[in-house]
Length: 180
Image (cartoon, rainbow, N blue to C red; front, top):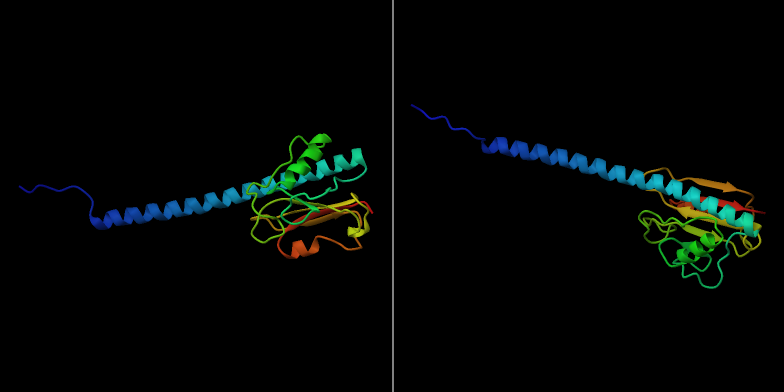
């Protein structure tokens, strides 16, 4: 009498391993795409909240929070950037004015938004001259999406020394408001 052997052949095991590998790869790709879309949704909400805080600050103070002295920004002293110490300064001004409970930071928060591949929020408040506005009468917020189409939006006039279009052509999104 012959005994039947049970088990899998080497080929069957290889097929199963390959199928599991393909399924794991598809799952990983789908998961990473979901995370990027989630971070972009948060960016949309964060930027809307920063805009509201800036407008509340303006409503109470008659100007946007102008940087004083050196902000410690990775761009220059006219900027507040969420990935460096300058963001703490802007947070203090907006929280102190009760315009926001806490200033949000970009989900990845690396580098500065004017550089390709970096993800952070940047807020520039004019000390005068940009868009023809006086000190504290104009600001721009710059950020970068991962999956969404970049966007540009403006309120008010910006005919003299405009700011924003170069960031947009470099892949960043922006919102600009000028009280000219």
